[in-house]
Amino acid sequence: MNFDENEFFRQATLRISSSLNIETAMRRCLDFLKQHVPASGMLFGLYDPGLNVGKVLASIWPPGLQKPSEAFFFPNEFWAWMKDRWSQEPGVKIINDLDQEELPVRRILSMAWPSDVSHLLMDLELEKKRLGTLNLFVEGRNRYDDFHAHLISLLHEPFAIAISNI
Image (cartoon, rainbow, N blue to C red; front, side):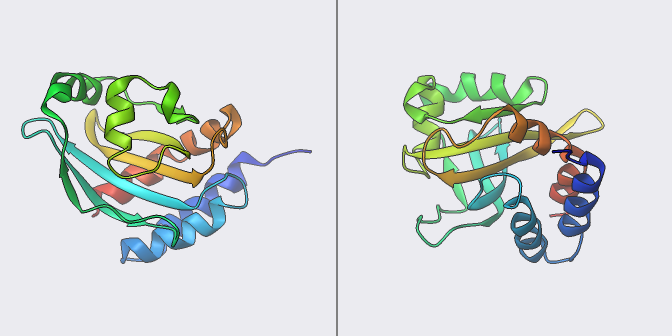
């Protein structure tokens, strides 16, 4: 089966830029992405390394999971780890089993999600400036693979532009 990455990029980009209301655009994009990638929710987040605070900029949350507060403080013992992580080169990370991740990741993600949720995280950056993070997530463990990460990585720029307009 041939997969047209250009068409995937075009359709996802049309949807994430389809509305001035970010939640509307995210919903349209998520509905499209679900045809290719397991996903029940989507979140744009931001980290302030000076205050050790995370902020949910916009999100689409499935009915079965409790939506977290918009701002939350990370544990102080992970402050240096978070600042270091925030300053690294952007990339895409698959988290299929929270119990297998290092302690800071487990503690931070467990602030908002149960342990049996898979995550596909992509750092968003434009012109060497970190803008935030995209988190696609779905109930169940081991739901993401390298192909899903590749597909989402194709959408780095459209998602970075979307988060910069929030």
